[in-house]
Image (cartoon, rainbow, N blue to C red; front, side):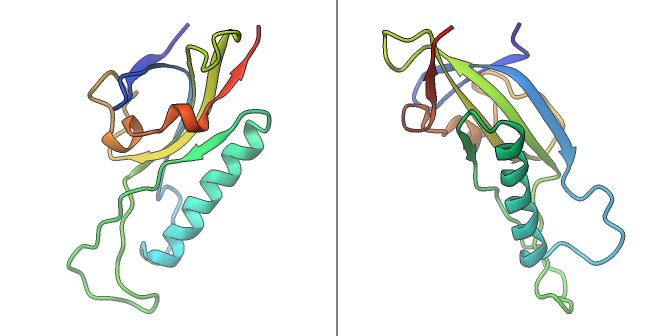
Length: 139
């Protein structure tokens, strides 16, 4: 069963079969979002996805970063990532016709806690280069 379908910019349709979401800044007790903290969060997300899905290739979509007009603090300028980070397992038709299908784990950030769908999914997610990143499998 698929949780949803996404149409990539290339026209390829991919099926979402597992989705993990979490608040980007949930549990933050002090400080403010800045480049150093955000770099740690992005690296952590990729490592978590690689650990959780060690037998499947993982691709991290580089997040957008906003720089609101706020005074810089001790750690430098304020920098804000989208409020939700996601890890999704996607499947599609095989790259090699002799195989049964292809799969890729994608980690990305998005502004709202919504299941990505169709051509309305985040443009960065839709821009994934499936043919270069996914791995074929046999059933």
